[in-house]
Length: 176
Image 1 (spheres, one colour):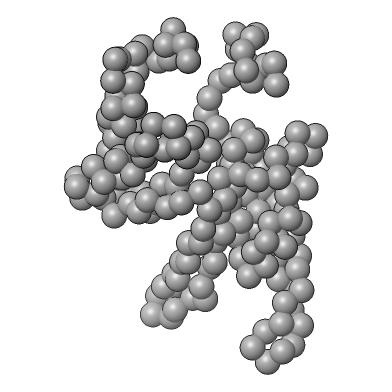
Image 2: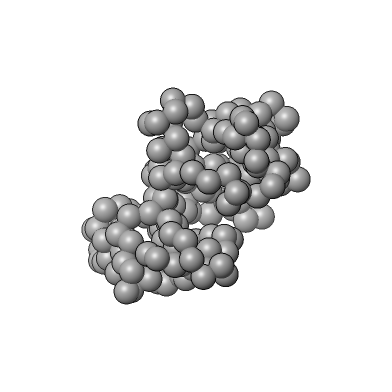
């Protein structure tokens, strides 16, 4: 709510428009490598309060510039099938969620078992939101197509933020 806290390049009367432009400028060098951009809690709040979806606008512009990036919701699935030489590798099922089960004390690691229960067929879980960064594996029991028990490793990845919120010594992140 305070424009003095913004990057100077974002201090405009048309703030949301400038954020979309800035996002596009930042992502253009990576446009051919982007697979998806998903909504987070800040974006869904903007949609709810201002009735504009800045990420959808940014994705549309990137696609107009030749990117194959897809706009994705707050949570969902990404399925990848890799080709190794002339053989087809198994599917990699990725479940992503912007962030649930925050876990202030555990840095979000207690969410591993919760995500495993929410999406038991996922091979990989990716989440963010709590501004922590780690990865962990979790062994789960599954039945293969012959109904034989297998122990399968699920990979859990918590993505961090690149924001520096603690340097000033005050503000929301410090007070939280």
